[in-house]
Each structure stands twice: as C-alpha cells, then as structure tokens.
Image (cartoon, rainbow, N blue to C red; front, side, top):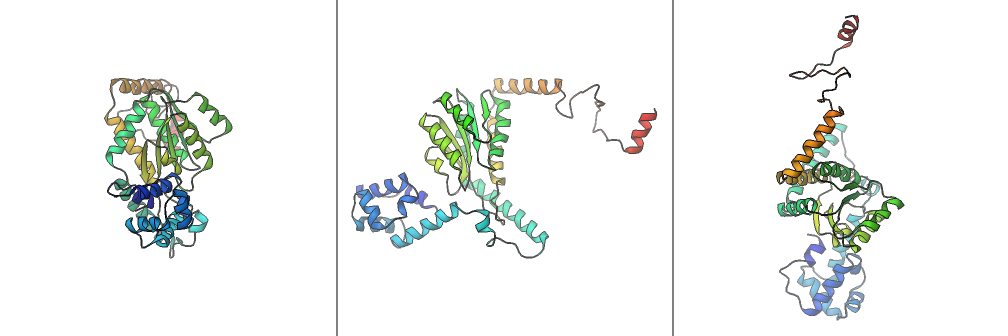
Length: 312
C-alpha cells in the first residue's frame, strides 16, 4: 500500500498532534517526509516523539523505516526507461521476451480491474455527460494519444469536446474561457510532465472539475481531481504499458454508452448519416469510386482479374 493511502485510512485513531503531522505530509506529499523527524516535527508544531509514535502507529518500525519506504516510492515514481533498462533486460530468445511481455500485460490488465471501483467509472461517466460547459482533454508525451481516443468517442455523444493535443502557449490561452461548468480530463502517468500539471493546476484554480487517469503512484494532479482512475504500469519492459489505461478509457466509454439517452443516440445517427453521405468508411455507398454494395464481404480482385475487367 502506498504511504499516501496509509495516511488516508479512515480507521486511524489520531490525536490532534498526529493529525497535524498527517495533514502536513499530505499537503506537500511526498517531499514533506523526506527531511529529518525533527524538521517534520518543527514544521508541524509538535514534538519529536510525536512523529515517532505516529509512524509506529501507521505500521512502520520507526521513522527511518517510514522514510526508506517513502524514498523507494519516490524513486519508483521517477524511474525512466534508461534506469530500468538493465533491471528488466530479458534473457534468452526474442520469442521468450515477446511472450514474457504479453504475459505481464495480461497481469497488468487483471490488476487494473481491482485498481478502481466500478462506482468510480459511474461517477466519471456522469461528470462527463452532465457537464454544462466544455470537456477538454490533455495528456503527456504518450498518454495524450489516449486522450485523443477518448475525445473521439465523446464527440459522438455530446457537443463541446476539445482535445488539446500537444500543449503550447496557445493551449494555455483556453484557460481564459474556462470555469465551474467545464470538465478537464487529464491522462498523467510517471514521469509526470510539468506542462500538464501546470495546466491542470490553473484549471482547478478556476473551479474546473477534473477527471484524472493516472498510475498507482498518483500524479500530483490527484490532489486536485474530483474523480481518479488508477492504472498499473509495470511490465516486463523498460517502458511502462498503457494497455490498462486504454482498457479503462474504453470501459468508461462502455459505461457511458450503457446510459445514453435519446438525444445522444440521435446525435450518433446524425453523425453516421454525415459519414455515409461523404463516403468516410468502406461500408459507405460511394458510387463513382468503384465501390459496389454487396450482400457479403467483397473480394479484392487480384492482378489477373483486374486486367480482365479492363478488357471488358
């Protein structure tokens, strides 16, 4: 269990002095616990023995044990592919590496099922579909692609959906028009990006409601989020997997679809008519483009058949 989760346990019986320490630890987590026990006590306005009693009550052997686990957690949050390259290097053939990786992704997907309660997805779906203003989506270097996928789904169900893509100075200009009617969806996984965190913090200051997709170490944005969906990341590779995050995004989409009303269904029908009229997909009736509607799958002609068609 992450130390943040331990500090937030509802069954803890804390004294007023211990509450001060916990509040300080959570306010500036995790850096607030990286100093000495004396400095933590001084900042919280309590005695040194109070700090020691608290960490023992939390289940640690003492402050050094508490701090060692906190440091390990911080290190895990900041791991780069380069740091993990040697520790996760696969031995043997390339086939074994592939199978080991796919097996580890399967395990990560199973963990994702238990990482976030079903009720959280229900809350997230209501947050998105009941928002009176805009839905904005943003993500990091890789996770922004998942944000774009979710935007592609949401635009079929409602208006006012905007994928911010790669954040630029112009992207931050959008903050000028945001407020409590709007929702920001953030995908932020370790190593958390400064620009994504900055945009989320400024949006939160404007009372924008935040839905966060993040990892088990929790992005700093979790302190601002109204709803948080957690995904395991670690697999048999130096690179974290986003497969569980994609599955969770699609699970949220499935939850939304299960609750769609008549207006949303009518919008999907209108979009499909527009796509059909413009021959967007293969199943469109695009006369003049050489495509023919058939009752079954159409076979793609080979070179000989194509030449015979030309002669005919």
